[in-house]
Image (cartoon, rainbow, N blue to C red; front, side, top):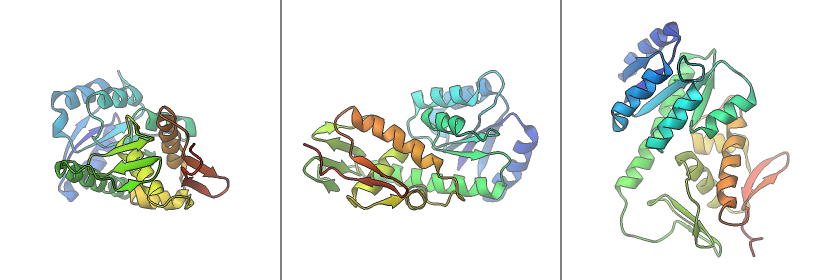
Length: 238
């Protein structure tokens, strides 16, 4: 794995460098937002993973994530933040981060998050590489259909545009078992491939963005079951 860590705290970078070397990963470290963005833009296809601090000199993590997403929709981004407010974490996800880790963090936890996110990205890339002209759908109902090879989803023949890899996986997990209620803990395990140790707000943030994209083409098919979680249900679509 070739990893870009944009982090202004040099002691954190030095600590993580030892763990990255132990994993056999090729890590590059930048201590400034603009320098980190320039390193990415110099060779966007070179990077397999980006860890991005929220508070950076010259250009903050939110802006860096937004600029990266203009170039690449798929490179995995984990945002590191000393802030523990829900709004900062939600905004980070909305700017394009796939995951976030709150400081102070355990290096082992960060390594586990990176591995889980990388596994997901490899699955997606393999699916795209295996893309064929087969137009059959993995999920197809009267109103909704999804193709995991082309990574496309449609509601009443209108394509749901701009789905991130995580949003697509989340929608697929819900839609392949219509009307089944999934708790946030279950979705974290199924979609993110690991447990969040009680922090489930990332699910709510992704559901919010996913709903906004669905509503651009038709009725809402992701329902909240209060006190439990979420479900997919298109039976009420006219």
